[in-house]
Image (cartoon, rainbow, N blue to C red; front, top):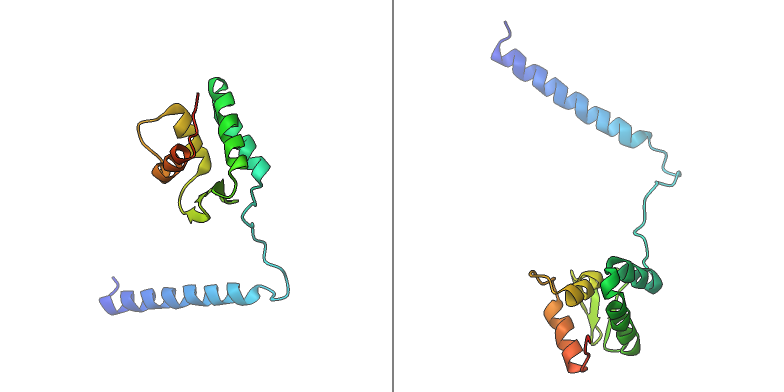
Length: 131
């Protein structure tokens, strides 16, 4: 039967062994070899526009196209970043998703996506009509 001191000693030895393994693993990586990373995929305007059109139902395709055309015509006031975040009057509204905003506008879901108030306010200010 092991004593408390023996158990504690075994535990400490295991802890030291794990730390040694970590150091050896880190040290074994050659410093001149490139580390494989997966960069964040850049999303182009065309890709986002296609995603918006593909996300909309067939019934709402013409309306989503109208919204996209509106944003293209009013690029200085409303647009989106490559991360799909809404930009209103040159200010990025973080944690927004232009696709969710447009789809919500078309389908009028119960839960409004973040930034919808700003998006809707600008559309009203510019007299944008869905019909």
